[in-house]
Image (cartoon, rainbow, N blue to C red; front, side, top):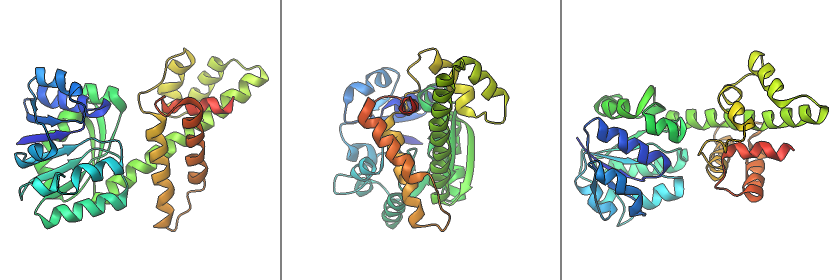
Length: 285
């Protein structure tokens, strides 16, 4: 399979590097060519436009910041769908709107293009090391065809059935992560105000019923002054607001979703959207 990969940011660049190491034939494109230089040196083929990527690909992979960028890349006269051959597979690794994914996949289907949603978790580090968790939705037959690609970039692959289930699962998991991050910030702030050593409180949290992935994996380094994961406040805000939109389609109430979207907007305004999403913890101080 020849892969055409669009989007070479923190996540996309790491995924392409691992695919090259596994021997895949890859062409790449990004609006910033300098992001591709290391990958070109490692064997990737540069293409000058989205149509050039699409026309020769057996699999088109996208790794983009959000729904707006995805629509711009996939739709329109210069978009990938207009230049893709029937029988091609489109594999998106971003966290996107269910509505937008349904819209694009329906248009792709009309041209004989199969769609797979495979939002990833694990951050830039996971992309670099090929240890991403992936939540995969789409037709079983299509999933089977691209499973080898997924195994080259992820160590935990969850096939969940329909396309939208993969997106929904990723959004809900992020929702839990962000709520937990905010709550930990509040707990540590109140504990510090009362005179409890934050490192000792963190150890007690990790040993008790309030522990979590954030407490186990992120808190120790943050307390040492590390900047936090590369996943930004802007991206967290985008995901939180996508979660908030889910209540338009489901009966179940997500009680904290609207407030979480507001909190992350405040954190973006206060610290800058390019900072790690863990900066939201500082709003509790």
